[in-house]
Length: 456
Image: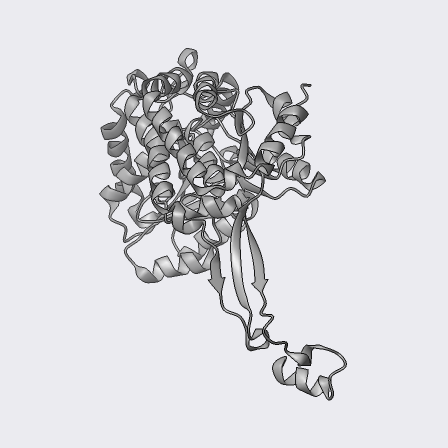
């Protein structure tokens, strides 16, 4: 197992030079990253096509464009984010001033996944740079072409002492986790998240975990059915369902079951064609192992639509399963593929109970025009984030911090949320020397009575 102690030591020395804390340095780094991404756009698209068969439209809209917009948003606001924030002081602190200084942690270790291999490596890096950190990124070995291009891109514009990409498999991650990092940012599965958290605990390293889970999508009886079907088909089947915030299953009201499923079938056909397996732009499953696991779910319940596969190309067409219960294997874990099971309900309490009986989902989606129904779901169910009358779209707003809760993760990022995640909030009190308040000292006459007047 390779030793990365030298790399970490060099990054710590670079960080302690204070160069990364300079605002102009941070902004120049972000501008260099943006320029390099634009210069290497065609290579990134080719790598994403090679690794996952992503179309140019998907590669740009869900990976490259999202990252460029994040950089633009950050550059336009970073000057205000880095300023110390003055806060009020209580009467007991008369003469003093309070400030909160956002300061970088040091070395940020970013472990990114394979499903959006460029976006989920670059987006946390933007926050790390903006906050003034050095960074080491470990991209996924399951998307080697994208990882290689990303490593090349970073190496061309940044010295390793500042930002480094380390390619490799599980052994590489384990070796890097042995080092004394200052912050860990992990995106991936719940089981691996537990391993990361255990490793972080050895050095009491703060961390963010962006995990997953079974994200429900509720379609109430008053939903605008045709629009709901199209937005659900888009959110579920983009990237062949390999999206941590994709609707994992439907909770469909019994009164609209038949008409909704018909519209869903039509929406899938409209978006991906009559024969999705022959669509040259339909994303493939990342590996044989994942393909086999997903195929095992196709025998659950009844196949309402889809169900066909191409093993040689690792393709599974968008599939809707009906007659599903919580006892089916497909409902035991996050699906992470183009398979959508449907549960049917008659009353909203059934939905709330079903979701509550399982780990907190990363996302939740509700289609209903009824504000009371929306309020009941929002107040009754804990989840990371989500949408009312849409799917997935909340992820793309830089004004909404994105993250999980409970088993779906901890911490959040995007926009200022990324800057805050990679910043320690240092509290400082600046005290006056023009006078002194005597009642805090134990030798003052009637000290207890006086202190009680202030501290009630």
